[in-house]
Length: 163
Image 1 (cartoon, rainbow, N blue to C red):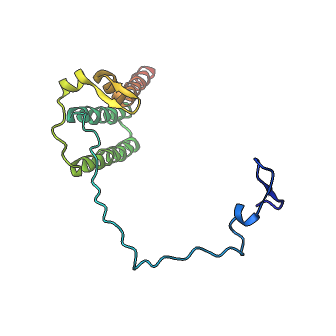
Image 2 (image 1 turned 90 degrees about the vertical axis):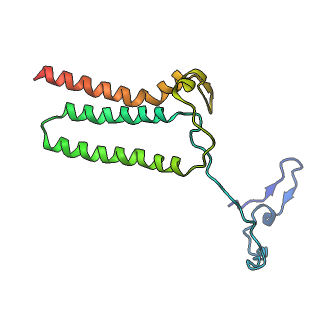
């Protein structure tokens, strides 16, 4: 809080402190409305479609790419009991990672049929930054899991040659 007087920048006149800082005890608090008298309007909300222009087969490709990543971890670390434990935990997280969106998609209202894969590749999809072609959108969705899978497999090959 300021201890000096506050001046209005345009007219250089003094501004009363309670007007600038309404925490002074001299200002009466606003009256509390009676909650029994106020009627809240009933608001009907519905979930919006999450990915209406993405076919279900693209979701399957994403799931398969992450499953391939878990399989690549299993191949790269085969033989260690500790690694099997961590792969199992990672697989359980993967199941949860894809189960929650599946539940959300299951409860959203049906807005018509989703496009098939060929139509998605031909028309693309609208994103926050503009229109993306189908192949560009697919690359954006799959670049991380596919790159990680290839990296893990490359490390597995490098370790097998080093031994």
